[in-house]
Image: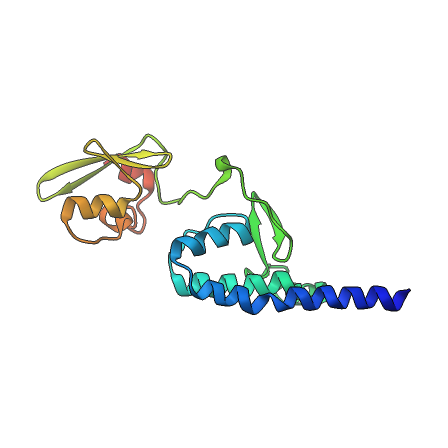
Length: 188
């Protein structure tokens, strides 16, 4: 009886591992948008990254981690002991103030808890930007921005519309300046 149970578990493990190469190959053919959807599926929360190589690498690791189980509990405990109680980011992350085990299955966050860039001022704030003598008022919305009567998904899109050139939106809007807070930028 025990021999059969062990055989069944071994077959399940082999089946799970057999799908890894196919999943990794699938990641190589995905666009950034598809990788971001896969990230949400595997990590349970959105990513702010648009770096294709980074997303592929982290997703590839996560696929293998979920299939093979990641590090053993004993190994994670020893690493945390060596780090004097500080968790290693690759092993754990914070979600809603709770420490999560990287191998633990996750559910997507409800929309109200989704990631919001801390550099952004509160919703309803107005960011004022003067470009070539013209002041542009950018209203921060829950799902983007409004400038000159048009809606935009990012500050970078507004910067390109105003200047005709590609810009880092936070830098262009003055939200990346060291020591300057998002609320200061919103107030002018």
